[in-house]
Length: 137
Image (cartoon, rainbow, N blue to C red; front, top):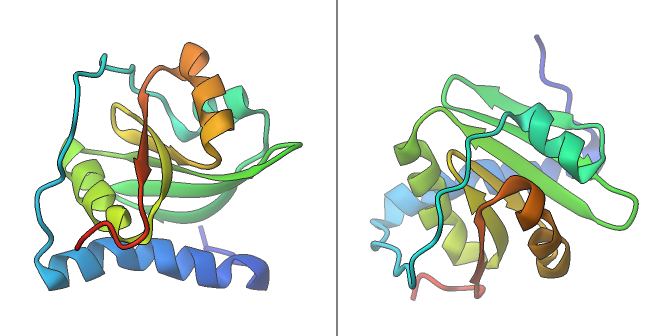
């Protein structure tokens, strides 16, 4: 299935796709997780976007990760699902350098506004992580 990327999403998609590569290239540090978080169930990309209430625009699909843009009525988000915990961990380590707010579950991540992500916790589980831009320093 060919990947179709609209011009509107080209730069954000390239930036997200580059995160693991850049992180690996600069020899990223271990993340500094704080607190204990309950384990969130594993969800498919379609389950997550169904809870958000959007139709996913698939932006990337590799054997180890799926990614979609999700436009809800009041906000936009990026939804990612991973085949293995390591893929998710590597992606999150790289994403820390770019800042942002992430709802993190078991082998899935939703990137979006903190208020909306907190509202998804009762239905999806997971925990919110806020990374400051330039957090790799």
